[in-house]
Amino acid sequence: MDKKTGENAVQDVEVRKGPWTMEEDLILINYIANHGEGVWNTLARSAGLKRTGKSCRLRWLNYLRPDVRRGNITPEEQMLIMELHARWGNRWSKIARHLPGRTDNEIKNYWRTRIQKQMKQAEAPYTTQNKYISHGVVRDHHHHHHDHHHVDAGAGASHSCGTSDGLAPETYSPMCLESASTGNPDAFQQPSSAAAAMSADSAEGFWSVEDLWSNE
DNA sequence: AAGCTTAGCAACCGCTGGTGT
DNA sequence: CACACCAGCGGTTGCTAAGCT
Image 1 (cartoon, protein in one colour):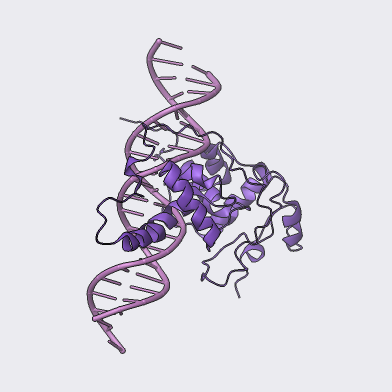
Image 2 (image 1 turned 45 degrees about the vertical axis):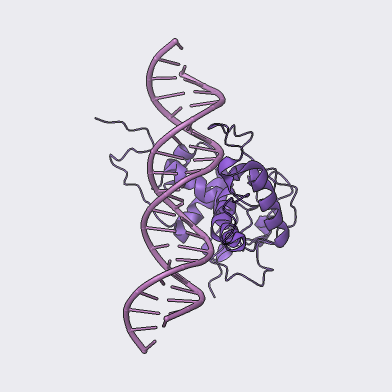
């Protein structure tokens, strides 16, 4: 009767779901800063987070990662997304690899909420055949060999963390410390330049809430 | 001014392929 | 060889904010 796959061990650890809190973010950030990422289930447990490894991974990759870039898709990026989507269909992660700092999730959301809508309105009444819709595109069969698990970041060295935007309201975005994205984005072991952003009491590489979210 | 609808986004879910035991 | 575990992908949902009537 127990199929506890380690991740779902609902025995004594109740698993949290839903939106992440600042505290949880901090725990995750600090843990990864000190121990590195990987083996997410173990990480979740060791860090003391009552989350699944999956959830931690997602949170980190899509949101907390220093080199992640959110909001304000530029027109150039939009063009690229449309182009790549026309070529590959819904291969979001593949597309994302060509947009430094962007995640598959964000591109997917962007596509669905904006581009798809735009096209629907533009393509309009007459055309019965949407030349753009992904249905017929490269849907060979369900194969996605995830080539690598790092985006080829490092190319986009100039991520200004979305602060230089005049557009989005910008939800709370913790990682607005200029990350050393030009190194190895994966490791993040020693937040060298980020360490500069830390205030005094974070001597041993522990970031406090004030360091990340300056609540005005 | 209040209620209702729509848009946007963060996060979850199920599934797949790869790898180690 | 079979089984178990892990990482990753893409689809989908649920919640909140914004816009509209």
